Amino acid sequence: SVERVFSAMNIIKTDLRNKISDDWLNDMMICYVERDIFAGIDDKKIIEHFHSLRDRRGHL
Image 1 (cartoon, rainbow, N blue to C red):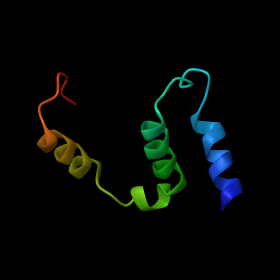
Image 2: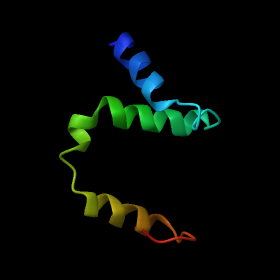
Image 3: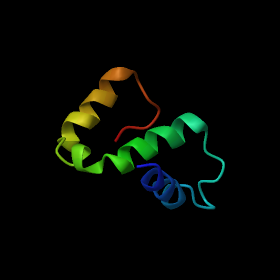
Image 4: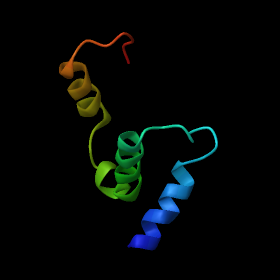
């Protein structure tokens, strides 16, 4: 399990994403490691949820 997380971290944390915050890295790693769970969630529900949180400068 620990090896799987470190492998995911190496995939996610590339040179382009080297300066991301710890919270964002943690969220990305959870989504990557548990991708089979997230694959079952409808994309439209996710988009609607984030739109309902607050106004954003750009819209999806």
